[in-house]
Picture: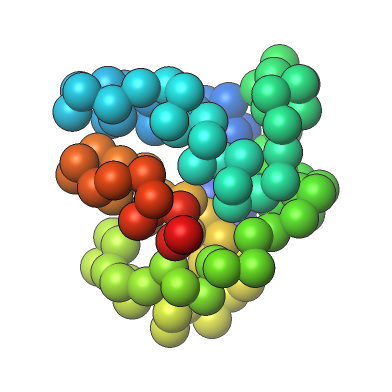
Length: 116
């Protein structure tokens, strides 16, 4: 499967969809940011720069300060694929984020989403 198109998509183009998905279910942009910060180690200032500079997903994850050590606890199916079986490390990271946003939209408690 050629994932190049997804990898080259700007994070800024997808971010509003994460917000919209969360808000449609009564969650907040603050919670979406908390998930992103937990997963990647980015902070508010860095996220703002990523969005302003239209950084692609490949660079977004490549430059992430610190992938959370608990990412292996993120399991399940997203977009028809079992996360723990995804072979491409970058695609797996993208799907981790998708899964966490899905859990937020489904009403899961933040403590459970952040695997604490």
